[in-house]
Structure formats: C-alpha cells, structure tokens
Amino acid sequence: MRTVFHLSTDDTDRQSELLGNIQNLLDDEETGVENIAVVLNAEAVTMIQKESEASEFITEFPEKVSFYACSNSLENAGLDESGTLERATKISSGVGKLTKLQDSGYSYIRI
Image (cartoon, rainbow, N blue to C red; front, side, top):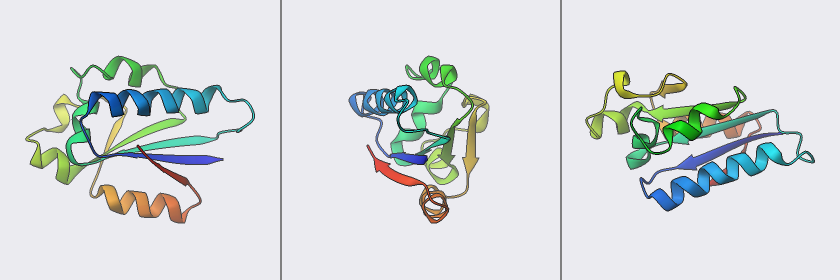
C-alpha cells in the first residue's frame, strides 16, 4: 500500500493532524504500508523548514516517508532550499506531483 498526504496550510492543528496520521499509518500493522509521500504546497511549505516546530518529528520518520515541497510555494513564501530539511525534496509543482503519485497507485488523503 502507498499513500500520499496533501497539506496546503500552515495551521499548526492541521500539521499536528498530518504528523499523527502518518504515525498512525506506520503503526498499523494491518495496512502493510510500503511508502508514504507527503506533498506540501502553499503555506504548508513552512513545515519543512529547519526551525519549524514539526522539524523534529519529521526527521524521526523512517525513510519510507518522503516529503515534497512545491518550489512555487517556497518562492512565494520567500524561502530557499538552504533553510529546508535535508529529507525534503523540492519539486516543480505540488499539484503535478500529486497527480503523478495518484496515477502510479498512491491513495490520496487531504489534511
């Protein structure tokens, strides 16, 4: 099973919900999760900044959890790659990545 989570807000409650849902999915032995992708766009890209409250949790997830940040959103927020976590991959388009992942069999969950 492969799942993609999508977040587009910097609301801390939604970010906590996202992190909790990722952990719940990882902990659920019945799902057999292979990969989890997290696509962040709009204001949510602040979540993968090194100084964010979520950064500690993000870095503790296993390698099967991948984080993707929309380059357009990073630019609009005035953020550059030097301030982002190493495990976050910059992508050209958040919606493009979501489309590709769903086309390759990922289940979509919007937070």
